[in-house]
Image (cartoon, rainbow, N blue to C red):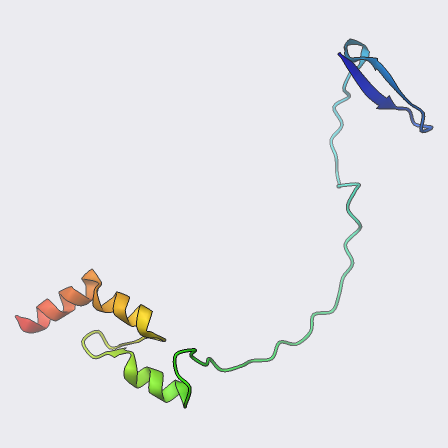
Amino acid sequence: MWSKIRTEDGQEGYVPSSYIMVLEEELTSLPWLKQPVETEQQAAEWKPYKSAYSKENPEEKVKAKYFCDVCQKDFNGPQPYSAHMNSKAHKEEVALLED
């Protein structure tokens, strides 16, 4: 088996693999990566949550529409609300109220 090598001055050639000795050298950095450059972080703009399920005033309508009175929990849409209504925790709360 032959291996392609390169000398320090840039010459390339093939040598028998049995002639090569790998030197264990611990890397302290990744030479192919550029040195890190510090950049200033821009201030983030805060935006209130707007549900994709409601066209009008989302904050009031969603809370009223997707609220579990039994567990006293708000949900932000029909899928999380439906998953909660079918959950074991919700069914246990309903069973406790019926007793």
